[in-house]
Length: 387
Ligand SMILES: NC(=O)C1=CN([C@@H]2O[C@H](COP(=O)(O)OP(=O)(O)OC[C@H]3O[C@@H](n4cnc5c(N)ncnc54)[C@H](OP(=O)(O)O)[C@@H]3O)[C@@H](O)[C@H]2O)C=CC1
Ligand SMILES: CC(=O)[C@@H](O)[C@H](O)COP(=O)(O)O
Ligand SMILES: [Mn+2]
Image (cartoon, rainbow, N blue to C red):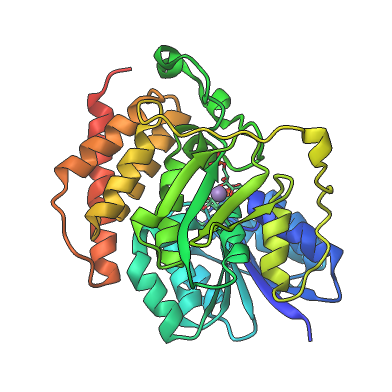
């Protein structure tokens, strides 16, 4: 029987890589549902190629357009729109696996819905876990969902955690992004395109900016804490500019297990899709002799204040991670639209964290309220900053 997939965020970078693997293994996978936010041209192509039962888009107008285009192309894919439709898609009994690849907080409700429905979840949307940590993991446990990390570092750790006995620490590797060696006093002037030019990975613009500030690694520390039930003191971040070692686990006997590979997201996605089997992913073989050098360095806090802020938010607990995430999303969007300096992303996040009272999380509503408040404060802070 084929594994029936729903890909939330199908038109993004993770969506592309997932569908590439699906196309390589038509005997294993069928596509039940695909979603996009606005890019209906790309979603149309994907629907015509993979023939899902359902497609979901961001609003009614786009849904009407896409439905008409699909109909005139002879497709029977049904189209729906909005968050409720995403939740329904993630819940549907006719799908086994949900690939959570929407970017940002918009992915939280549908990813949680997949957990409540006890699905096999391939988690790329780290923001959902950063926001809802304990609630999300409890939903996974209580509803018998299977959670597979797709984020390259967490997938690497998943592969290296053969046993929980004797784990000393996990090490998340980080490329250091495009500005690892750039003069600190020139960072305020960098452009969105420069920030999105990641040295090793081709990704969406939001996560690319997060890599440049190293907020991405901060979000990944929080993600690792929840995924692997690992205390903060046992999570280390190490800059490894080549992005070949995707992360490591150190054991008390001195063993260090690492997962290596070329920087290509098809490897972790294929691992998660096929687990416990292995399937070809079209990834070029790793040629260590050609690479010759793998190097490592500690991150400098003065260059990457966002990493420190994320670690501080995890230490604080409660709503702090959701606040950090929301402020960061608003600040990154402002930077990408030219309304905020690169270096002000950290300033905005720090200010919002400072201004929101710590509070515990009991329900999803607590997270939604904190998220909305942080967004308002971040927008006000950005408006107050002149650039
Ligand atoms: N790219 C990568 O290599 C990696 C990504 N991740 C994580 O995976 C997630 C996706 O990243 P990536 O693929 O790079 O992002 P992209 O920006 O390339 O794609 C984002 C996807 O989400 C959809 N989307 C955007 N906004 C909304 C919204 N408000 N509601 C519903 N759908 C929306 C987009 O639709 P549309 O195209 O119509 O805008 C698109 O399908 C992120 O959380 C990222 O952190 C993790 C590790 C690696
Ligand atoms: C591919 C992936 O998992 C990204 O999250 C990647 O880690 C980004 O690179 P950085 O190490 O620069 O954050
Ligand atoms: Mn990653």
